Length: 84
Picture (cartoon, helix red, strand yellow):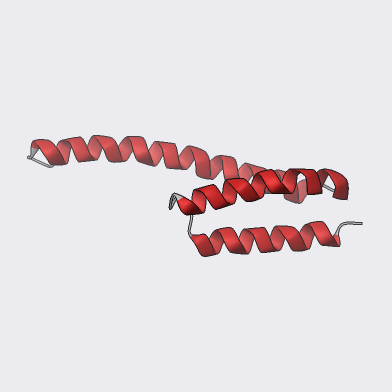
């Protein structure tokens, strides 16, 4: 266990940040899941910019890796284009 006052504070801050990051990562995963479950191309096209913005923001804040965001956006675009 940490003995320094600053390291105890750092542990407390890390817990809060981890909880915050977990919430936003989970929200992103649910949005991607929702988009992949869609069968209507028009609805998926309307939802895609919102999901794309979310992915870019999370990548910018280092909650997810930038390449993961790029891969997800690419695969979602392919999925939307494939819809009839």
